[in-house]
Amino acid sequence: MSNVWKEASIAVVDMEPVSGVPDSFILLKRHEHDKTVNGWCLPGGTLEPDETPEDAVCREVQEETGYEVDVVRKLFSDMADVNGRPYRIHAFLVEVSGGAMIPFPSEEHEAVMVATGMPELDGIKKFTRRAIQEFNRRFFQNPSRPTQ
Image 1 (cartoon, rainbow, N blue to C red):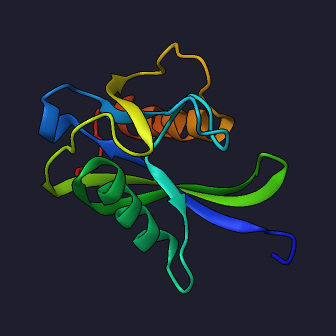
Image 2: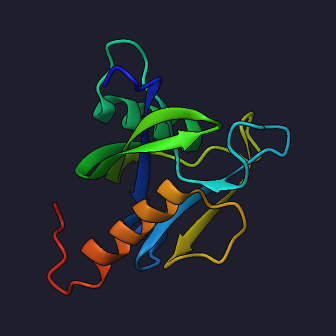
């Protein structure tokens, strides 16, 4: 892992219990001035020193959405190129355990969307798209979906 510049965690937030919309999750839209990540993304961000990927994803979701979450399970870990720098991305399925949606726009994001399926939006990064696909494949196309 010596070539890894940073690690980041992203979350597919299962919104069905909160929104009542089956198979729904949160997408955030970055402000136009944010050159690090353009377009729509999942909640998440880089790990702080000595922070686990699981702790980071819970912290980032709370900071970016206002929701407190619990990790249900890891979807995948993989390398990704973010603006020419290698990152190890950890993707998790999380469920809301408390809190409330923060007002938008926020400091980092200009919009929030509760989405389903694979939204037809510009600017969805490869690892964001992969996490959404894993979410749909593992948990919503299977009638015996785990509820843990």
